[in-house]
Length: 440
Ligand SMILES: Cc1cc2nc3c(=O)[nH]c(=O)nc-3n(C[C@H](O)[C@H](O)[C@H](O)COP(=O)(O)OP(=O)(O)OC[C@H]3O[C@@H](n4cnc5c(N)ncnc54)[C@H](O)[C@@H]3O)c2cc1C
Image (cartoon, rainbow, N blue to C red; front, top):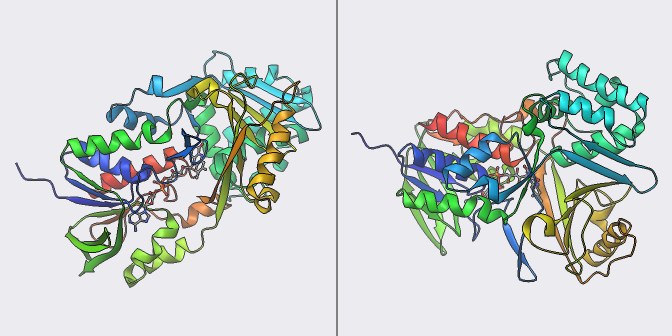
């Protein structure tokens, strides 16, 4: 049997891990380098008050088929590590009414039609506008020849104020982390298609019952190492060597010592802003560099609020509008962290100017409105991921790089590559799997 060539993967986020697992499965020997002390990248565990929490509350949906398949490969039981909630969206507006949309057990897209027709808080006019939205997307096969903003798409399809404020905008912010005035309609339509038009279960919300590192990265590392691969943590790749348009080696900084590893295949699976340093010395990669410097980034802030253990939201996940808070998650209901509420704020906004204490107090005041008796805040913890995702703006798909490059043996993976998806775990995993396929 011919031995399969070794592959070096740079970055142990979900994209790099996905590539590593799929290549390991095929019998390749993997060397995976991660500059941080833990794997997971932008989806990892951090510690707060002796609790394992996420660097930002993450949510998956049933349509994340590649993520789910990969978790199963490394031995994760996805039915216990994720709590599956049939689509139930409740968005409470500070100044207006509540919108509540619940999908019944009907095949797609009937479940969505029924949900819209029975939604609490919508008038006949709103329901018809929502149906018109779905029909417009279908008629255009979920892709416009000329990309426009999500806001323009709402105007074009006559979406009403309440639908935009309490349904479409919260969905756009949470899936694309980009304001509707800038967000790409084509990517929004792609997400809509995958979530609502195939199987009913694709729209299910999947909330992790374990911390993010246990959900996939830890098991992935175990799997890779059990099959002969090597994962180097706290090991930054400083340089990639290219000779005659072919990859020859990488130089890693491990414990302050530089070490060179010979290889003919590399997958760079870092966030886009980290690639520049690795590729700028190679003029053949200028075209990739030129694309990446055009990317903009958006933050995501998660505010953890610890209340007494009997404090509970009425639902595992609640949306808020006309507030700084966007989505509140009751971690007691899905990961046994009773009384702990995580509140997610996507994109830039006035909250970025507030210090952590003021922000936590403001968010606490907003969350307190959801209770008849104001709960007492025991402690709070704010995590700001300043470059959480690339901004998923109009025409961004035109500058997202492919997995293959012009250099023999060099491939790219990461949520920012040309997946058609916004920056999500599923996008990252799909890109990693695609890069692995090109590599072999
Ligand atoms: C707060 C927050 C909330 C989110 N919520 C959701 C959600 O609810 N649902 C969802 O689907 N997605 C969500 N996302 C997006 C999702 O986490 C990302 O799209 C995904 O994790 C990106 O994975 P990646 O592997 O492409 O990149 P990364 O996670 O950025 O991984 C790149 C890795 O490369 C390493 N690296 C960089 N340079 C080097 C080097 N020179 N040498 C070695 N290693 C290097 C980095 O340390 C990092 O670990 C969220 C993101 C954030 C930040």
